[in-house]
Length: 602
Image (tube, rainbow, N blue to C red; front, side, top):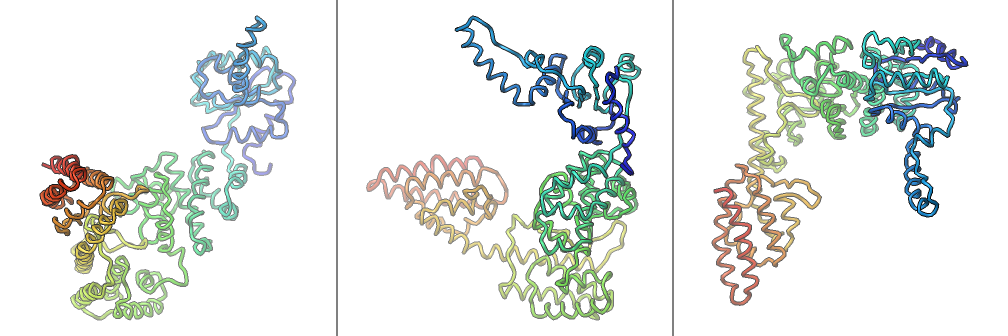
């Protein structure tokens, strides 16, 4: 094979298996994952009947090794099942005939002739003593005249200077990880449409693997399968960007291979969202990786990278592929620029865009700003920052204070017009402080002097967050009425879906929001008193679960619950004569559910 780095290995093996009785074994040595098994199976592909492949993985002693050999000789995993079935029948047969028909794998295997060549794999993953292993191999070589080929990572197999090893293993062949030979097979294993794309980018895969200096073909194969999980959820319009998808493939493979070889950790990947200022020591591993691949994006997942730090960590180390987050990250990358790029994005990318296009985009952005068209919080913040940035590049002649007032007015206007979505207080801490759409917000760099533009941006950021939280709180009275309405209809599942979790296990949007305090205690008590016995029991369980985790966000609601118990007791007493069982059920709710909740908080 032209350019085959293992041509000499194949030539030697070809000569070895044609000898009538070599009298020694051959060791095919390479690190784990370098493709030993792949090469040897391909070598015997046309003559499998004359070769026996045996993995010694897990063998603890000679008997265990011989059982593994027998199992493969008799047809693999099904052989042991067939022997078990035979032995189950042997008991009744002995009763009738007086003969013992029980058999072991080894017993049956002795009746089957061994093929000319035996290949032992995973030697270093067995628990066999070296002398036992060598004795087993020697028996096949000298006694049976078989050609034995051993596949192993030699560094983890023999003790240095083992005399018997030198006698029995007559030749050691060094295998080189051959991506050229393995890649077509790996790619053919991929589902479509990933397979078609990776075939076109086989050079990208090969070059990235070679650059990694990690001769583990098994890890490359796994990385390609993992890439399929990404490719399968990328939007069709984004897939059409060949340059962008090539960059995604290259970056994903580089980071994945570095993680698999132990050069990068999950923390390192997350650190890609940071700034390597003054060569911080924690960035050392990322700096080495970026130097190896001669690519800054390996180190930095910030603005314009196809995968940011947090996203790459979740995908590569956590196995979590979020289609929405992935596509949003790709959209924000300059490699995936599309004709429908919005004007605020063009201004954000002003440094890399045509000057006239930036000027036109700023005019359109200002018009949409004046018309109050931006309603997505992340986009609003980018527009605010763009207005400040435009002052630096000569597009906005207004003073900083004038820009700040315009932005403050914008927030007030969209709030009064009902265009801004509220933000639950318990989610406010998750209000993304880094950026939106893969594009970051302005931040101080360590050692930088005070920057009034950045200070102003974060004042506006916090003002927008507060406006959203205030909107949410203002809506809670109506939300609470809806919950009470559902309760009055005996729809406990609807109530639980908001206050605790849905029937499918999804956490309720009001799980840690003290919404019930907006309800009048007497009105709630009257509604509870109308519930059926079954619904009362379910409501009690719901209350215990809602307050099972002592969080400060619900402290106010605990105090509200105390005010409900007294009027609820009155409701029970009013029903005791006409419906004693119902009154008893209300008492049980108070005694077994509501009061224990309060006791646990006292």
